[in-house]
Image 1 (cartoon, rainbow over the protein chains, first blue to last red):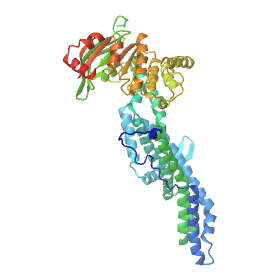
Image 2 (image 1 turned 60 degrees about the horizontal axis):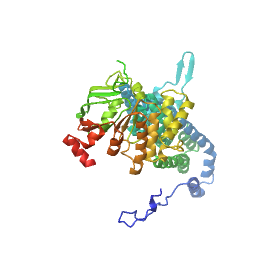
Image 3 (image 1 turned 180 degrees about the horizontal axis):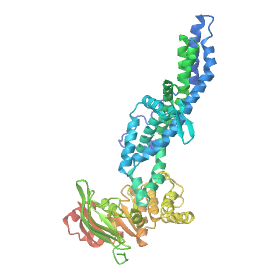
Image 4 (image 1 turned 90 degrees about the horizontal axis):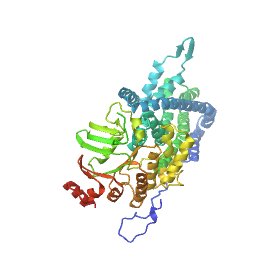
Length: 282
Length: 248
């Protein structure tokens, strides 16, 4: 932007102080998370210096369980990645269905999208858990459907509906001139969509899509309610194994909160960065 | 009925077009012969743009007939893609594809739609970019070009399809005054080469200079038409006179 260098004697409106306000903003860095983690771990440890001498310190206990909890967290990430992949694939097709020229395709895609977008994620998860069989028999082959796979399917349903809306929204947000230009160059509808419209939509879809992924990752803990051995389930089991010590509750759940935060926060920052970048370039 | 060059290339007959309740075109007729340049002028909202958008079937019509080289545009079974290979169009807002470079914008349609050989297309695309005086801008993205430059790329893009007639929809209306001329010069070059052009324009001086025939529309009808000299100097209809007095 070079427009700030103008000089004039005419009585025109000038920016109040000539400079855009660039407020210094507090930004979280990774090491902030480490500090938080430290505080969470240490504070109960210190407070328990006075407790029964026979018990292991909170930090010791947490460190002992940490590898298992992290494994559980990685399982959460696996669920999130697969649910996102399935949801994105099917959702993209639904989204294209929503802009189909065939009325019935459009209506059907719209109805499916609306249904799954307006259903609670947990209820969808329960449906997937209890309505899907525990194994599929196709011909002579039996394919087991373990709980975690059902959880992936259950969570991919709301993702699918949201991706469908992201796709539809991005396509309809492009100026109609792009369609008209392509049409007047004798592009078929399919060519217009794949060569002109969708490539431009990717940029518009990326930030909301990443946002959705972040939300999905945080929602994977819902799977604990239906018995998948992810990080929340394991945390509960670890606490039970330690004999239900109440002083362990806060540190353990704080630990879970913080690992999610460390994973999701950079995604959120990156999303904001991309939104800004794309907003400038149009 | 096959079309021959002694018949009008574009023949518009008693065309009616409504958007819902609003009737925009109320029985418009005009003929364009091969190699002719016609300008459609008139106040805003008089249906000029709608009229030329009907010629390449971007808008449908409710009544009447539009023949382009003998192809009836007002036909449910019209092969729109075949029609649009013959009829190019340039828009007020350029509508270049922002994710493609100038050269790619020009090359895309011949490769994808006409299925022409890529090397040949590139050669002719570079020639077209040179023709619209944009040598050196081949690899620029539309966002990096001025309005006038973008519009000239848009003209090159349209020419790449080797259309028989090009529709220009107020192509200079969105431009900065200093870049209007470069676009008009480009169109004039085309006109002199014998390209059939239908222009909707507010550039009266330009219309007078290049047009073979001027049509004046107001409220959905053609009020008056004629050769530029007679039209501008001896307008008969009071509406034409009023319009010209406001604009000249």
